[in-house]
Length: 265
Ligand SMILES: C[S@@+](CC[C@H](N)C(=O)[O-])C[C@H]1O[C@@H](n2cnc3c(N)ncnc32)[C@H](O)[C@@H]1O
Image (cartoon, rainbow, N blue to C red; front, top):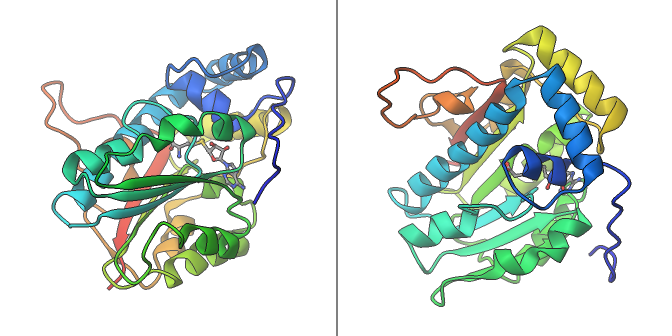
């Protein structure tokens, strides 16, 4: 999968590096920071959205690896390594957890070693793969994951880069069909149902200056990703509002980034 020698183009802003910038990371270039800052100007919510998405990933993986006994994860659209990567959260609950990471950004590949620091009891692997080709991802991932046992599929802020609804639903369906009952889908997705005007302006700006192009979806457009699955409470909600930790400052403010977790019965 992918090229043998990754080519990192530092002249074109890229989603993984801009996301890393918003999360407070260091793995980004001036061109990424420039577009990242301009996006913040158009859409100040973006930093809170990116951070709420990461915190949701941690809460959902903790639930699956802890209470729900899932010890295998397929994390597509991994992003650059940051604090509390999927394997760190899962292996804190169960050191024997096995995680396959998938991304198509050469810079993520260059940093993949940081994603491969598995606990000795478990295993992590990294694939240079594309969500537009889920069959190849499944074939390669099956070297590390046992698809006869439940898997947590984590798709955080990634299917928004599949512009066509039907292609996006089909990609997720192909992935979930390969997983046995007891598997989970953990998904997050940018939306324009919260702060509509600013969200639309931000995505227009992104599609003019960022890469790859993206689309925002409503809760009604996100629901079909969960067809045939049992949706866990509280359903499709802003990432900041999915089972939030108790907070002395009151209820968390909704960010324009939805999330949801579903169980394959
Ligand atoms: C917005 S970041 C999200 C990172 C991480 N999942 C998170 O939620 O913090 C999107 C990631 O998806 C990756 N990506 C975009 N298009 C992709 C594709 N077609 N196949 C695989 N990965 C892709 C980008 O390289 C980037 O790392």
